[in-house]
Picture 1 (tube, rainbow, N blue to C red):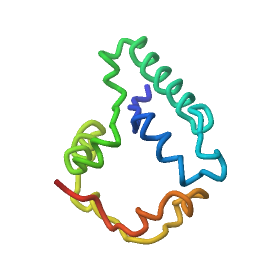
Picture 2 (cartoon, rainbow, N blue to C red):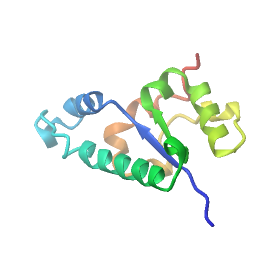
Picture 3 (cartoon, one colour):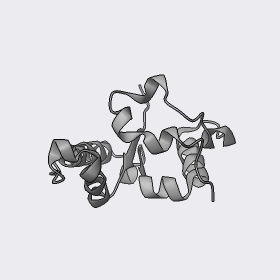
Picture 4 (cartoon, one colour):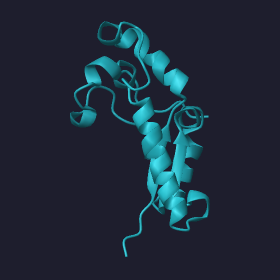
Length: 126
Protein backbone atom coordinates (compact mmCIF):
# COMPACT_ATOMS: atom_id res chain seq x y z
CA UNK A 1 0.00 0.00 0.00
CA UNK A 2 1.30 3.42 -0.94
CA UNK A 3 1.31 5.85 1.93
CA UNK A 4 1.24 9.51 1.10
CA UNK A 5 0.53 12.95 2.44
CA UNK A 6 -0.68 15.98 0.59
CA UNK A 7 0.86 19.39 1.13
CA UNK A 8 -1.32 22.36 0.31
CA UNK A 9 0.29 25.79 0.40
CA UNK A 10 -2.57 28.24 0.62
CA UNK A 11 -2.89 32.01 0.47
CA UNK A 12 -5.68 34.39 1.38
CA UNK A 13 -7.65 34.75 -1.89
CA UNK A 14 -8.06 38.51 -1.46
CA UNK A 15 -4.29 38.93 -1.09
CA UNK A 16 -3.75 36.67 -4.06
CA UNK A 17 -6.06 38.68 -6.29
CA UNK A 18 -4.48 41.91 -5.04
CA UNK A 19 -1.02 40.78 -6.08
CA UNK A 20 -2.26 40.13 -9.62
CA UNK A 21 -3.18 43.78 -9.98
CA UNK A 22 -0.25 45.74 -11.29
CA UNK A 23 2.05 42.79 -12.05
CA UNK A 24 -0.29 41.47 -14.72
CA UNK A 25 -2.41 44.56 -15.33
CA UNK A 26 -1.78 44.37 -19.06
CA UNK A 27 -3.19 40.83 -19.11
CA UNK A 28 -6.15 41.27 -16.76
CA UNK A 29 -6.75 45.00 -17.00
CA UNK A 30 -6.07 45.26 -13.24
CA UNK A 31 -9.36 43.49 -12.66
CA UNK A 32 -8.55 39.78 -12.29
CA UNK A 33 -11.36 37.35 -11.56
CA UNK A 34 -10.90 34.40 -9.17
CA UNK A 35 -11.39 31.88 -11.99
CA UNK A 36 -8.76 33.59 -14.17
CA UNK A 37 -5.98 33.28 -11.62
CA UNK A 38 -6.83 29.82 -10.31
CA UNK A 39 -8.50 30.65 -6.99
CA UNK A 40 -11.70 28.81 -7.87
CA UNK A 41 -9.86 25.79 -9.26
CA UNK A 42 -7.57 25.57 -6.23
CA UNK A 43 -10.56 25.64 -3.89
CA UNK A 44 -11.87 22.64 -5.83
CA UNK A 45 -8.52 20.83 -5.38
CA UNK A 46 -8.46 21.66 -1.66
CA UNK A 47 -12.03 20.41 -1.19
CA UNK A 48 -11.41 17.24 -3.18
CA UNK A 49 -8.18 16.33 -1.38
CA UNK A 50 -9.51 17.05 2.09
CA UNK A 51 -12.87 15.36 1.39
CA UNK A 52 -11.18 12.29 -0.07
CA UNK A 53 -8.85 12.07 2.91
CA UNK A 54 -11.69 12.22 5.40
CA UNK A 55 -13.83 9.72 3.48
CA UNK A 56 -10.97 7.20 3.78
CA UNK A 57 -11.29 7.49 7.55
CA UNK A 58 -8.37 9.81 8.03
CA UNK A 59 -8.96 11.77 11.22
CA UNK A 60 -9.60 15.39 10.26
CA UNK A 61 -7.52 14.91 7.13
CA UNK A 62 -4.32 13.96 8.95
CA UNK A 63 -2.75 12.96 5.64
CA UNK A 64 -3.24 16.52 4.41
CA UNK A 65 -0.88 19.22 5.64
CA UNK A 66 -2.02 22.79 5.03
CA UNK A 67 0.45 25.66 5.31
CA UNK A 68 -0.74 29.23 5.07
CA UNK A 69 1.76 31.33 3.10
CA UNK A 70 1.37 34.18 5.60
CA UNK A 71 2.48 31.83 8.40
CA UNK A 72 5.37 30.56 6.29
CA UNK A 73 6.54 34.12 5.63
CA UNK A 74 6.11 35.22 9.26
CA UNK A 75 7.52 32.07 10.89
CA UNK A 76 9.65 30.27 8.30
CA UNK A 77 11.71 28.20 10.74
CA UNK A 78 8.70 26.89 12.67
CA UNK A 79 6.70 26.31 9.48
CA UNK A 80 9.52 24.33 7.90
CA UNK A 81 10.18 22.39 11.10
CA UNK A 82 6.48 21.45 11.27
CA UNK A 83 6.51 20.49 7.59
CA UNK A 84 9.58 18.29 8.03
CA UNK A 85 8.14 16.65 11.13
CA UNK A 86 4.86 15.90 9.33
CA UNK A 87 6.72 14.31 6.41
CA UNK A 88 9.31 12.64 8.64
CA UNK A 89 12.27 14.30 6.99
CA UNK A 90 15.22 15.98 8.63
CA UNK A 91 14.94 19.73 9.14
CA UNK A 92 18.07 21.77 8.37
CA UNK A 93 18.70 25.47 8.90
CA UNK A 94 20.07 25.51 5.34
CA UNK A 95 16.41 25.34 4.21
CA UNK A 96 16.11 28.97 5.25
CA UNK A 97 18.64 30.18 2.66
CA UNK A 98 19.21 30.09 -1.08
CA UNK A 99 21.41 31.66 -3.73
CA UNK A 100 20.08 34.96 -5.01
CA UNK A 101 19.32 35.32 -8.71
CA UNK A 102 17.46 33.20 -11.26
CA UNK A 103 17.40 29.40 -11.09
CA UNK A 104 16.76 26.75 -13.77
CA UNK A 105 13.64 25.55 -11.93
CA UNK A 106 11.99 29.00 -11.81
CA UNK A 107 9.59 28.35 -14.66
CA UNK A 108 8.18 30.51 -17.45
CA UNK A 109 6.50 33.13 -15.22
CA UNK A 110 9.65 33.94 -13.25
CA UNK A 111 10.48 37.18 -15.05
CA UNK A 112 7.10 38.60 -13.99
CA UNK A 113 6.86 37.19 -10.48
CA UNK A 114 10.27 36.44 -8.97
CA UNK A 115 12.06 39.82 -8.85
CA UNK A 116 11.88 40.03 -5.06
CA UNK A 117 12.93 36.41 -4.65
CA UNK A 118 15.87 36.86 -7.03
CA UNK A 119 17.07 39.77 -4.91
CA UNK A 120 16.80 37.75 -1.69
CA UNK A 121 18.97 35.01 -0.29
CA UNK A 122 16.73 33.58 2.42
CA UNK A 123 13.80 33.95 4.74
CA UNK A 124 13.68 36.74 7.28
CA UNK A 125 13.86 34.51 10.33
CA UNK A 126 12.01 35.36 13.53
